[in-house]
Amino acid sequence: MRKALRASVACLASCLLGTMPVHAKTFVYVSAAEDGVIDRYEMDPGSGALAPLGKTEAGSLVMPMALGPDKPLLYAAVRSQPFRVITYAIEPASGALEQKATAPLPDSMPYVATDRAGRFLFTASYGGDKVAVSPIDPDGSVRSGALQVVPTGKNAHAILADRSNRFVYTTNLGSDQVLQYRFDAASGALAPNDPPAVQVRPGNGPRHIALSPDNKHLYVLCELSGDVIQFGIDGEKGTLTELDSIGTVPADSGLVPGVARAPVSATAASGANTAAGGDDGRPKIWAADIQITPDGRFVYATERTKSRIALLSVAPGTGKLAYVRNYATEEQPRGIRVDPTGRYLVATGEKSDRISAYRIDGSTGELGLVGRAPVGRDANWVEIVDLP
Image (spheres, rainbow, N blue to C red):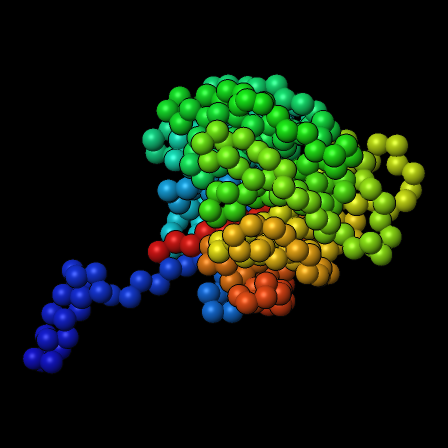
């Protein structure tokens, strides 16, 4: 009896002192555009294996997603009419999604991100040639329409705030440029920087972007060439300077430079089959997503025509990239995501009924397949969150 009492007292003391072990859970979310659902998984922290948890209804052509930076929230943009963003609360114990709010978006948006403080939502429209800023309520929900809609060059594809939350960058695939803005974190307003844009080599088609952890470099994956362009970031002005460019598609791939794709129609059944303008039948480069590990040592990029993931190493100090190798993955890989620990990578394929989980070798960046899990049709965007 006394032993049981002493054990109970010790347990209570441990709880009060915060010494009880906390078992965080890792949840993975994948938007399946054709099925109109978000697939949910729990990732085993020891092995990286994915256990399916179920599906959450979202809407036809649900595609880009973003996590709240300081709250257990998931934002998902729906690209069918009516264009909208859905705010979901994430239940920490189970990973279940509870819809909290919906808000209109000014166009079909293939990219969504929050500012670093979680007060504003950024979206970019490929077909509408625009970016937008929407307010986020104090509870993390998006309930109102855009505060600001900014015309861009042709085919705005991604929008992201730097880590200081003072500058924002947007890629324009069709205009071969990266726009650079000053960002007022209090009002959410975007204003053109000086200069307002940097041009890249014609025909590159800048698409998705990744920031180095030290905020010194911006890496831009180009959809039509497969190149990754390294930009240096001026810490005071936020302006970009092109430093280097490296290919991710081997010369013997048999692929020719890509051409800009038609926008996804709001009435389409899927986003996986967008047509290439003036297609001559030759297989073309069609790069999609880029991710960087939390320690900044490795970069990964996908190419959809050959269904490959490229591994690039990052030189300490200079941030210069070096091509290492590439890996076969799910068919037409649209999205990849590195988990918060930097130990695992999850890849989707728009034309695959499975997603793949890989272990990342911490020394070399090499990928080793952990396993595959079933997923809905037209799987494209991945988000991974650790919750206590």
